[in-house]
Length: 212
Ligand code: UDP
Image (tube, rainbow, N blue to C red; front, side, top):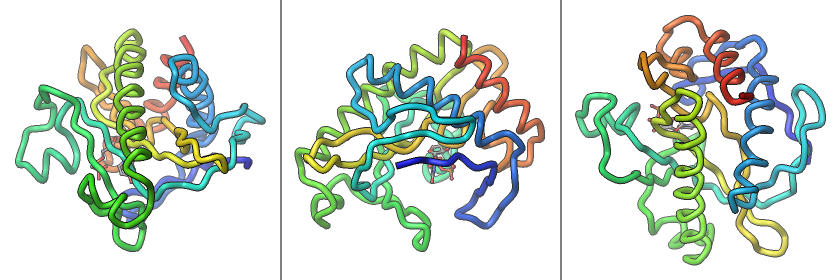
């Protein structure tokens, strides 16, 4: 398949919509840098190659309708749900599972639901969880070397025709929370969600750091 990265941005389940100029090209470039690096670190992905500024060639997979959230610090919905201050450290990475459904607003589900509902096997789910933790340890180190704290992020997985589970979708400031390691400045989609300004600049800054 060919994935096209757009400048369209949505938040709060599509309620807030806008265009972020250059976002598509930046997210394509960032994902195109990160996915091959993850492959080298033993994480199989759908990435084949970058085709153009906004296009990527990827392997065809059957998507598993689960969003895996990995958290290193409390932020966003997790902080809100538990009444925690954003930035509260977590003693171990927290994995969360959400049902990928725009109509339902991607609700949080239990670990058992994907198997109970026949979306994937128990083995598939275990593979997904192990891969998500592997991605986290590789990326924590990668971003810290570039002066960025990886607060949390979302991953999606799919199955090849042969049944292998691989990482799909993207890894970018749209799908991760990035805080500057020194100043704590937000360098991700929260700048758009929370009307903080400097959205384009933050995305460009992240591309520059990832390209180092
Ligand atoms: N996330 C995402 N897509 C979603 C929901 C979350 O990419 O549909 C990412 C989000 O950017 C953040 C992490 O997953 O890095 C955790 O998001 P959270 O559950 O805190 O939700 P939010 O506060 O973004 O509503």
